[in-house]
Length: 98
Image 1 (cartoon, helix red, strand yellow):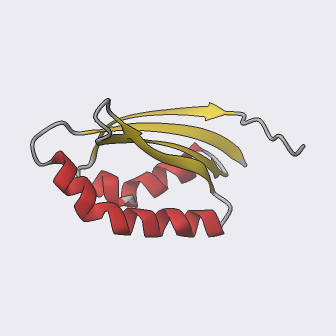
Image 2: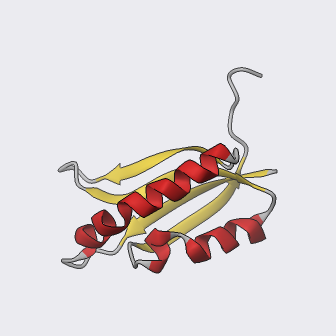
């Protein structure tokens, strides 16, 4: 399994935060399912200086990039036009218990 860092920035139009909040419960349910499968490692919202959510920073474990891309095609923040810009990098996370 490969590890990936996903840094996704939201759209900046006036309705962007409203779309994020509208899709948040479905997004989090999907992330919880990925966690049960051992694919979600860590993550959360990126905040601006005012504490407003403007993106996401997440670490995942997938078999390969194709599997990650397939998940992104159904991710509510993608299909619901929440994430506008995404940077994905393969990473090797430090395991303090190893």
